[in-house]
Length: 416
Picture 1 (cartoon, rainbow, N blue to C red):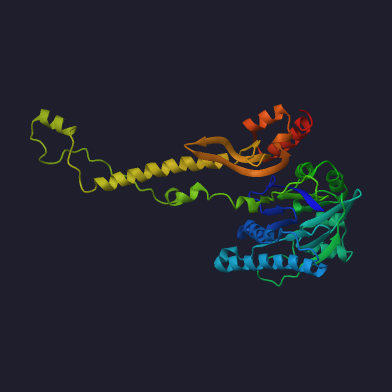
Picture 2: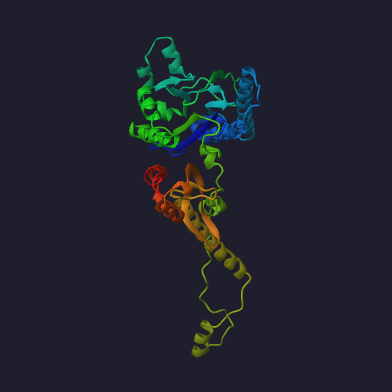
C-alpha cells in the first residue's frame, strides 16, 4: 500500500504570519505549529520540517516496530537539536519552539511520533479516531476530570503547551505503531482546525471526495467557524500500491515560505531607514572673476558651463544613489504585491499547478513561482479545460485558486 496525499495551509484571518509548517509525501506526513511570537515560531516549525522530511523514504522490508519508532524518534531529536543550534547562534530566537506530529508509513504499518498539540486523526469506516494526545495544560485538566472537552476549547490557558521541540528541554515524544488498511484516511492538522471544529464536523468533512477537496473544505470550515489561528491540513488516503497517486511531495506553510528568494527590501533597508542626505544647494552666484562688469557678458556667463568643483562628483554620486534607492523601492513594492496574487496554470510536470505571482515575464525575469501542485493532470481535462489551464487563470487569493482547481476537476475532468 501507499499514501495518496494533499496538503494546504493558510495564515488565517487574524495572524500576520503563518507559523505552521506541513509536509506530505509518499511515506511521510508531518505537521508542525510554531510557538514563540516575537521569537519566530515560523523559523522553528520550518526548521523542524526541514529535518523531519528527510525521513520520507520507505523503510526497508523487515523493519521491526521498534526500529520504525526509532526512525521517527531520531527525526524528532534531529529537529530538536537543530532548533537548539539556531538559538545558540541567534539569542533573539530564545523561547522559540514548535509542536510536531509525524507519521512514517512502510506500506502496511504507520509509526507516529508526537509532541505538542497538533493532532493526528484516522477515519475508518466512517468513524473518527484521534491518534495523538495533546501535551497541554488543559488536557491534563481533562484527564483529571476537572473540566470537560467542551470547556477545554474555551479555557484561557488552552494554548499552554507542556512538550515541544525547543532545543533546550529534554525531549520525550509519544511513539506508537499501528496497522493501516485500504480505504483508511489520515488527517494531520494544527489546532487552528481542531480547536474550532468538533470531531463530528471533522469526520463529516473528512469523509467527502478526494484528499485535495477535504483539505480545502476543512480549511474553509475552520475559518468560517471563527478560527483565530493559522490553519493547516494534511490528508492522506491509504491506497493500493498500483493506484494513481501523487509522487511529488508537498511542503506548505512557513517551510514553503522560507524557500522564497530574499525580499528585495533587504537590498535597500539602509537607504529607507537611514539618512538619505540632502544635496547641497547649487550656488547661483557667478564666481568672482568669471566675467567683467558688462551686463551682457554677465548674463551669458550665468548660463555658460562652469568648471566642475571638487564637490561635484560627490553630488553626482548622491543623486545617483537617491535615484537607485527610489527605483528599488518601487521594484520592492511591486514585488511584494505580486506575492499576494495566485493563478492556476499547467505545470512543467503535466499537473495543474497553483503559482504565486503574476503570469508574466519582464526582461526575461519570471514574475512567479510554483506554490502548490495538484493531483489533477492537464491531460485528463477536456479540450476546453486544457485550453483554459494552458493560458493561465488569475484567481487572486490562494483560497480562490484552490477552490477553482477543485471546480475544474469536477467540471472538465469527466468530459472530453
